[in-house]
Image (spheres, rainbow, N blue to C red):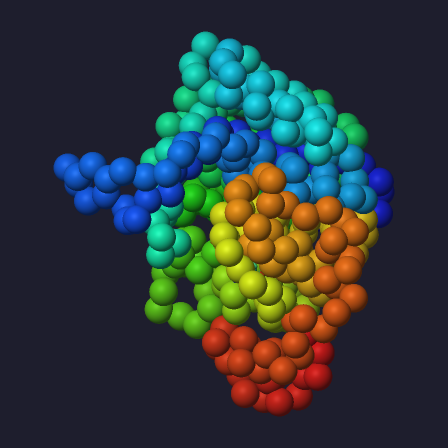
Length: 326
Ligand code: ADP
């Protein structure tokens, strides 16, 4: 992995979607129509959310490679990213800008259909010059062959590769082999590492230098060559967990780019993600550095939760009893 103190930039290569959200009493069953509230159209997409999160977290210049159509949704996304301070490398496609059709029920369940559109046109030849890039961040809402080619190019150039394996799908070995930091939620981890072993053993089996699983309101757990780190979630009043994982990834890579060690980077990413759950929406819910610092100054991630989280992840009792640290 590259030296995180070399002062380069973060490049996010990935998806941008217009999130078309309607709230309804319940998610319609197949063949059913339900009446909902007013439609809202918000900037989203895993890649764009992560770029906004990295830029708001501060500490590294953030750029994004994305493919957009020639429509009002493209303007919405460009504006949101630019206002957050993200430098854009836009591939202009003849296909429509990506869109996510989202129904949110009164019980906070959601059903999402993604129309990838322009995102599906991101290709190997679109990767910009990597000379000043320190970290490349990717997700799986763009073609897997492109993601793999970018990861291999980054690895060859000495650029750190962070891969968020979302949405859940199997990942080719060639992509894992070019990944420095892998981030999965519980469902995604089950797809790439099965569900028979403990969480710790599944993370260790992935054969990447750092493997992290996010566990919603429980927190997160990271495996690296020197051992395990567990980080409980900050206790907040969550109203909408959309983009929690994206905020986590963006804040995490910004912390690496600042030179933070893994435990502090995980705590900072957890604080940012917790704040994102306290307000509705995707990019609009992502906190600023000042808000994250204020939460970090509290003990909202109670040390009392460490043993329970460690047990959940399958860490040996001896580890749980011995460690006073996270
Ligand atoms: P995803 O959104 O990708 O499914 P998670 O639900 O695991 O990812 O959430 C990512 C991170 O966001 C968690 O590791 C945790 O730090 C934070 N988080 C998620 N839900 C909550 C919550 N209810 N309260 C506090 N933090 C949360």
